[in-house]
Length: 406
Image (cartoon, rainbow, N blue to C red; front, side):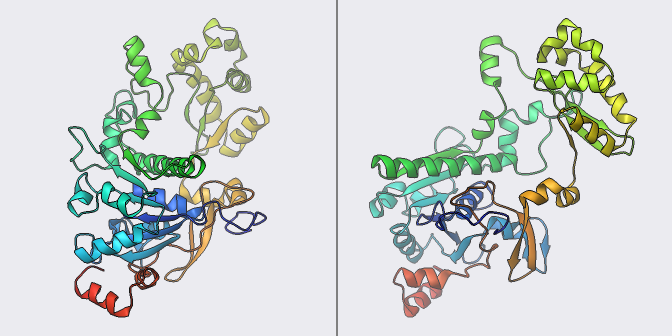
């Protein structure tokens, strides 16, 4: 086992031989590159020689080392490059000639101003897949606005349907839209690479707007509104599509969540909590009907759970084959036996901090497993190695440094 992943596969990694240039900052673009790097792509992280990726300073740090960077920067070779300079542009074009993928998130028109438009990049490498990740896309009236995940969570309708019915719209306390866009970007890159490989296609430009992927995941709102004129409202922890579905407090002041999306599960829950009579009610036969009687079902379920401690509740639900989960904080995730069995929180040896716990690769593959080879490296740690590979000797690298290009 390596980082919880069986090593019984072919020995090759799924994306071995794919070179990715990560020229993005903060979250959506860099996380997409991290995902590709986890499965064997060689990822070269480009940062400005002075500023670096802002994620290095985001959130908590230890001994001067940003902990978020250790995760987002894992499996990446770190180089510095000032793309605004002629020397930086020349190095970038040399690097592009060796690459398969470029991920960038500059505002539309920025690369063009630097003489690095997709046309110029494709002239250097016609097979290059260019993923452009921005808040609002490459065209349209908002395209030049600065865009962050928070704006996407707001404009996508997510915040409007999140929170209590009598409370304000609610934003997530983490980069939800960025994370969704990162997964989408990685998928888009793989789709383009497959087309190139399987169908003899060349490179292409991928336009990822952060406001769009999250909109695709909030359900059938667009079609429901189009056909019925209905707008989804905030329902707190309840669902408009089924019930009981909520969070419930146990006798020992813990919390659990249950879901009854399947009719059979809803029936098992009501038998378990001592109210099988409601199963025969006509309204109970559909999720929407149950949702319309959410107050009653929540009272039955909540009263039963409130009289029992967490372990008793979970054991009873599991015995009844009903869906339940304790509401964990991160310390409980560390101790949970299922997460431990999956090695979801794995240990990586870090040169700065020693043993470092972080989330593992996102999925397991039997023949070409992913792995975490190293955590986020110091800024520019691999600049000399990569430039030497491109043919830049020691004197040439010194000149580039003197000119502020690297």
